[in-house]
Length: 196
Image 1 (cartoon, rainbow, N blue to C red):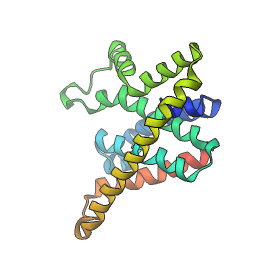
Image 2 (cartoon, one colour; image 1 turned 135 degrees about the vertical axis):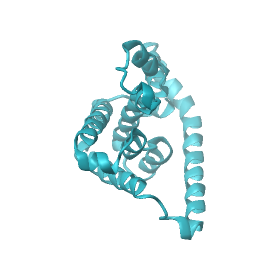
Image 3 (cartoon, rainbow, N blue to C red; image 1 turned 135 degrees about the horizontal axis):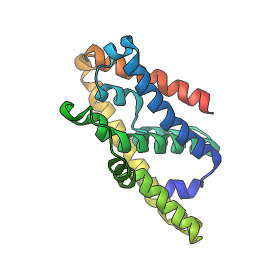
């Protein structure tokens, strides 16, 4: 919320969030229709892992460090879109197989939307704009946001250090996980290329 208030809401953020949400929904449908993809990514866990990245801990800090400030709204929008999709449809996709054929009810989807951290952040930002305290609140929340971003970079760096110290096991993954990672790299690259 602090980063969102500091950068402000613009059309790029809204387009990026809508595009991320829509593309993930389209690709999940496509994966489950095309047999070769369904064979490689047989369950929703691998599909969601290949489509939804942890942009809060890695993408946003890297974007802040490397990209001009004018492009940060694309990254925030992508994070909002993926977070909303994960919180709205993730519980439905990841539930027990015995209940998977149930059509998600509107009340359940609405509750998931309201309980999403992204939704709460957006509501907070709109309230700040409504009461015209967005600049003041943005300046105060920017300090903890920078601390969280710094801690996220430390956590990711520590985790990557642990992984690289396990040289013999670094690529010892099953084929489905390798394909999910490969899919994530290709999808994310194409998304950022076409959205900017």
